[in-house]
Image 1 (cartoon, one colour):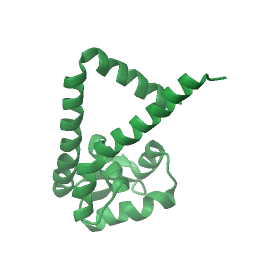
Image 2: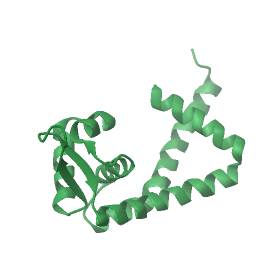
Image 3: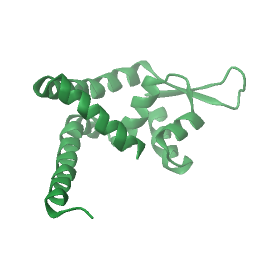
Length: 143
């Protein structure tokens, strides 16, 4: 059983995570909103940008979403010429995804805002705090 002080500390941590995430996503959200896009689109752009030629199936697995959840936002990104699908070399039925030049520019703007945000926070907190943060994030991601 968790004592009351520890429970309060954990609730404070939940609030900090919520407000940190809100701050982390604020600038990209505003950039996306101007294009009629949202966070799901950002996630898709980010991971395709980091893994050019990822298959649709690979992206589904990476994001841990259903085909239905991915279909509409991916189609929208393709219609906006931000993402292109290319038939696979070994299997033409496989669609590999990559960012277009415009998609790369948008993704760089979105991630640039977030990397600057993280860099400022890490510099303010120091290297030991950054290492601790990474351990916490890895533990949460694996939970």
